[in-house]
Image (cartoon, rainbow over all chains, first blue to last red):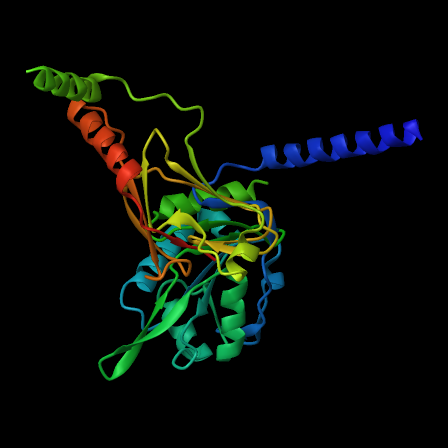
Length: 195
Length: 142
């Protein structure tokens, strides 16, 4: 009985040391970091590149995922331009980065419209759209806010502006607040690719 | 006369004394276990202020911890039970986050530069004092 207790205690200690070792091995990021990381909630949306958009398709790459809409006047163009610059700064490593942009405005953002819009920043960027219910579920899984507001005869959408960092194994590792520089993103993508 | 001397002494100390050393630059906010249940029973639970003030080099890392048994939206992050979110700041600025935890839908984090000059230290200590007594803008989260 005593030996069994010792074995259990030993296993618990070993597990704790293993967890600490894994955490210590993780690189320091410029982004906010989730600890412990959880699996990034999967998407099942229509991809702007055609077919279905699934995060599982990009295992082995680092994913930067944002939420926005093609009629966004300021935040989305700024974020997407920043991500495009970050990808350029990565050079050849940019091939191992996938930018995913999920719409918060399914009424206007068709897959074709997103393809044309995102292509203006970088042709490799992929957009995701779907039904309002599908997109609401995605936002709930990530803690993203989006609220439609009237604007003259039309409307705009107030939305969360952070970008999520998903590592090569599909773990949701961090969240970069709006306004960070391309070098910050490039730094974190390099760090996640080096693991 | 004595009051004037005391005032000058306090202002001089606030301007010239070195800033307090901290073991960690993290500014933690914790959702304790049972928060969700307290809210469900109608309690007003104030954890995260609508405005947070940080200072580079002193407390420039925001640390959010969810120790409750249910997921919580905590400032800019959705945190699973037992999960934490550690956000470092390197640039002094005002940061706005969408935050469903506050009625305004916004949370502001003001990051001040390291107060290196006597005037900067005086201003920093005055702000700390004002924060300690004046920041009652806490609203329920979650």
